[in-house]
Length: 238
Image (cartoon, rainbow, N blue to C red; front, side, top):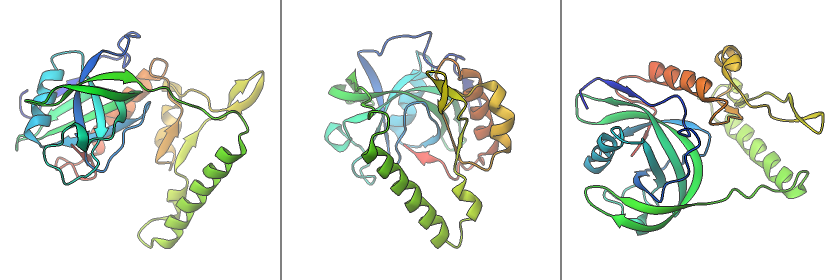
């Protein structure tokens, strides 16, 4: 990878519906969680992480992203990682002059580590898909937890003098999706939603489909890279 060169992934983040591979390289993250159907800017400085990214950019760009149990661990092994993580595709990679790497990844599926198959020069693991367990519609406990989470976030904003009140408008959702002819679910966002997303004060949005939203996700990736400073301030680190 050449310094200051951006490498861009294919437009289809699910690789034309490819199945989950038996094993993938593992990128450990410090104090950060990547969720399926979300895009995340990252900074990688560890030698093993940089080597991993140099290799995957020449292949299918699929990696397993797992959060470390202890962010201070410099060379995490299997026991140092949470077993549930996210299969992700690497959209863009930018090599920095200091040898570190800036990248944008997009989460695809929840996965779990079955066992490690390689530890050097970076971790590789056999993986299996971890099914999403959705609560039934109208589940009172889930609705109560969601309300509590929103209220706690509101309190954080209200008690933090450095955070603007507008921050509470943190999620952009188009509720025009239909269930049995009724509008009661989030619609899948696509390129037509880009002007509204760009003008929105929200910091998050839902929902995305890896195929139908591929163009919009590419627009978001480019905007993230444009806004990020060369020093990589504000990005999570691997």
